[in-house]
Length: 238
Image 1 (cartoon, rainbow, N blue to C red):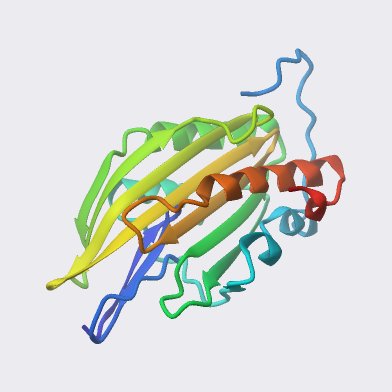
Image 2: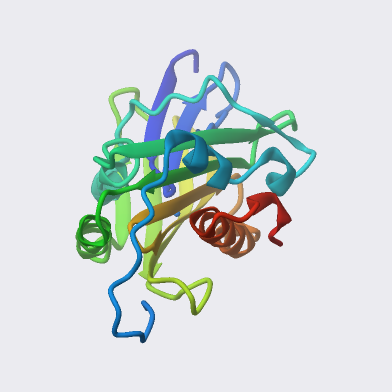
């Protein structure tokens, strides 16, 4: 196979398939009981960047991926993920991609922070995503390059922290194949809302299950966003 095909799951993410002899994948995430209105903190680009997962958070075996391509749509019903990541309409949005230093470049991790002008706008975006993604249970699609993606998709609204205002989690597991070659794929995607801001995490790995560190990174992403909103140092959270 000499052609390169990119399949966008983003989260649950971005997948690229390329090889001369084998597939190579590149993947490229309840409110307070108080009766008072939630506080709106509009994050600047600088603040949003500081809230994203850092290289220290993802580990010493990763490096920043400055070449990640976000242009290819996700396959099948996972296009719902594109609307809350690449097509997000927040006034402030920042993202970073990490790739493993291993030969395969996997796992791949993306972290994004978006900040809206109002809580209502952020809530509307997450609600729309939930409605769309909860109807997505499987993907079986062949792209123009002949790469077949077959995934089982599960979703839930379980919160990484009781302090979350809202959260939607997506897991997609299966494989992508071309000709007689097949590669397993597991993806974890989550979006967490804190008042008027969102933290989004995507992880992809060459595994038959969702990446094991997904929940831990989502919990850390929420804590970093919450710290920045409060004016605290996000690097001091754990």
